[in-house]
Length: 324
Image (cartoon, rainbow, N blue to C red; front, top):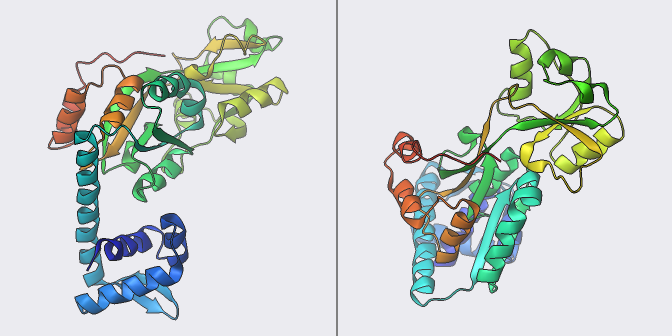
């Protein structure tokens, strides 16, 4: 058996048992993958996938064990490549990051600029999505780093490093009645249609939870994954916006009244994470520290070596995260 045979088999499993999607992801042809898979199965003496006609319906019991070992082997090979590149002081490579629109638009620009100045030969790819979409990209090994807020349950195999904390702010046109309120209450917000972020499909939204504590239900007019979209519809008078504090720009949002809502909603923590067992390139360590200055290489390595989630969390309990 060889590297490509294992790579193709793992790719099929990661892309919903679709040879077409696996071929597209790897930049090869379907016949090449099919031939390699058949050769691997002949050598092993059993099938990795159950076939129904020309399609695969599920992974066989034996196949599941082989794919588990193959995934580990491929990860080790990638680690060896990373070691060789760093030992040769090769500053070239690719860094793929999955994140949300808010992070990509409002938080990461200065980080990316500093990174590009330091590593001009590294290709940097930003993939934007919801927490669920970021989790899918991580699971499919399409990215090396993930940046998100909360949703820890979606990322069981990741080392999560807390970077900063943020609150929610309410935005309205300056002539709006809420602009004259000195301290917002949930009762105030309950009078108006709200425009906020897309809710998670995996759990209760903090918006509904906060309103429920007051015995109320929010009137949600519109949800969007994009802070700029929320601002646009607020400006059109379609509702009261609720956005992350990091999404407020004094230079561009002067036409909006920004009302503090930190006392109404929980404080959120944004983290950067990577798959446990990953060997990070030097430039990946540097990107992490550019994003979170407290995340030194030593601290990142200690988090990677932590035996469980509790031990990992203990490393950060005494670190005071900035609030943005």
